[in-house]
Image 1: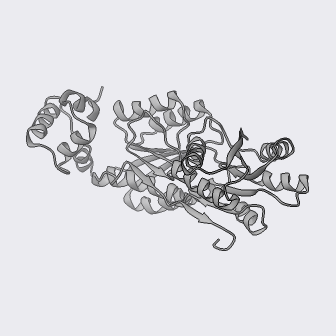
Image 2 (image 1 turned 135 degrees about the vertical axis):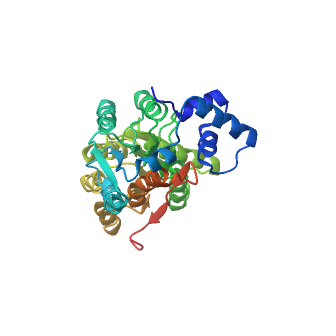
Image 3 (image 1 turned 30 degrees about the horizontal axis):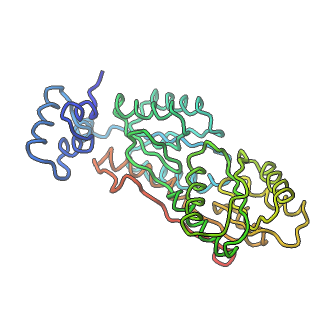
Length: 341
């Protein structure tokens, strides 16, 4: 079995990052510690990736990219970013191998990882399904296969992934709470609609929203938190049922897909005055919702950058030995109205 950086780190009693810096001559490492790391690496016949690549000449590198919820409208801009990176990195003699999954199915994602490993990828960017099995598989790639992994759009706890590229979803929830409090003047109840209750992205947004309402002392309360499975029909049903059964709803927050269900619900109920509405992701349909007056604010997470940047981070690591500047490469949180689309 090939020796990994993690094994050297464990033997030296330091972090993987320290081992990487010592072996590749990057950054500051205590001289005694560096000497110890180099000695262990020599005893194990470990050759750093940067030196392996030099000896390999112009070997073509392969980067795997795995997405989920491939048919969701918010993925349009992510794929634009990915495909732009594919075109540009071909000049670097890098192939990008894509695996697009329509669901958040754990087995499908594990199978996608295995298929990319079989094709000989040197790095992986993944929108991970939030499961223990996927977390263990990512750590296996890093520790046993020495394949660096980046998460994007959605993150996953308990892994040794290199970095995360995407929105600070918790902070976006704080942002949504501040907007809702201003619109409603802190009065009434808010119906919160998420996609999948197990989805880490959705959960962080909802947690941030609730946290900020409590911290700020807002008079707003939560009417209900409902999962819609990202389906417009479910969003419609949830809103219709809630507005008929729960008095005093002044705001609706939808943190996931299926937003067109908002329009259907309002039309079904023939409302003379609708609740204030905040939605996520700048898709053509969501832009039209703002223009037509079915939503007030849209929170955009720079999806194009989320698709574009991970491949470049991996390319810079594999080709030049450059580590990302931060563990969290957050994209901008942009607030859109019908006036600044």
